[in-house]
Structure formats: structure tokens, C-alpha cells
Length: 101
Image (cartoon, rainbow, N blue to C red; front, side, top):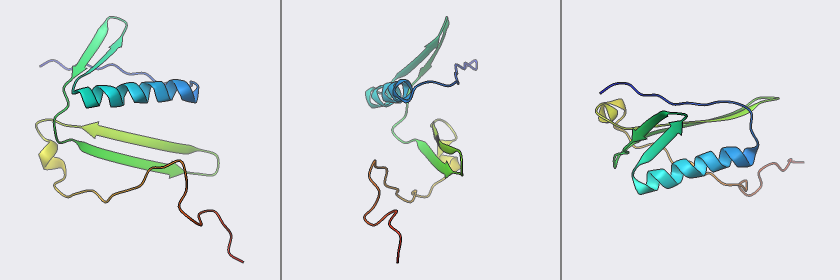
């Protein structure tokens, strides 16, 4: 199979970025992802088990979320262990951000 790749990056409004993420999530749930840029099209067929990596970083003037999701022939060889669970929410845990006196 020939290598196909479509990508993009650039500054956009948050709602536009959320729209892309929602499209990815919807397509993952439906079991097929098509990404098109001009005449280039990449078709992905997610498997039942995927390797998922989430990294969140916060510095003084910059915040970043990175997500890697992949599957395929060598996925089982990447990591056999179950990942430690994280909670993703728009609300912080009880007492988060309160100063102790």
C-alpha cells in the first residue's frame, strides 16, 4: 500500500477546531474516517483496539494538548499494559485552585 498523508495546521477560532475534533469523533464511532484536502483523500479504517496517547502541558504563556491515536499491524507490540485512567472535564476537582491559609 502506498503512503498517503493529508494534514493541516494553523491559527483558527476554537469553535472551528472543535468542529474538526467532533468530525473525527463521529467518524471514529462510525468506523471509517475520510480526510480530504483538495484532490487528496485518505481513508482510515479504525480497528477495535487502538493505541491512545494523551499529553497535556501547561507553561507560563502556553498550553497544549496532544493526542495520538493509531492502530494496525504493530499496535499490539507498542504497549500491552492498560493505561492509567484520567478524567477530562470542564470542571476542576473539588477544592482545586483554592489557596490554603
